[in-house]
Length: 171
Image 1 (cartoon, rainbow, N blue to C red):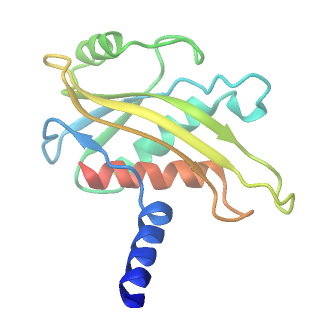
Image 2: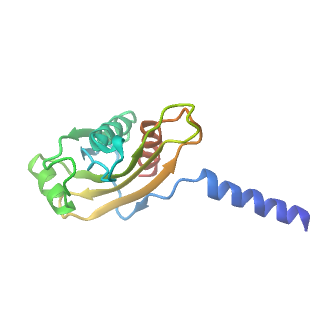
Image 3: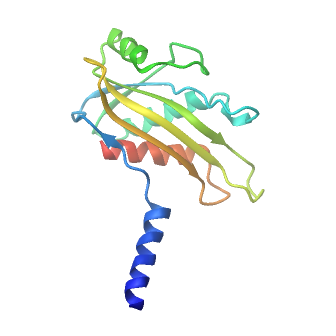
């Protein structure tokens, strides 16, 4: 009985601390596909200093991470609306269609909080995103995660990079 409880405890610990939420896939994104990655909407948390420019940073991180693999070719695009304005998925699809892409990544930064090292607070980051098929606007995949750093030396950019790797590798 004690061994059983130990195994359950270890599995619970692994599940709740080490696993990223799944990327929900509805359609396949073919290998070698060129994906337009529109700069994300900045986070909109009042009074949070790191929010300004967080969408552009996040878009560039996702574009770089997606391009580091031979799985996809990512092309970063400037946001066709302001950094705090909503870009609907329909508008993102129209924007990508006019530029000749098959898929587009549209998303928002939900959290971007950075503190100085040794303040004994941790950085946080969060994103929500959809990968859309341009031909018909269908959602090929979606993902949402808010994450806290595991140490005082991690950064929101590092957290977002981890999320980008997870999304890329899950497609």
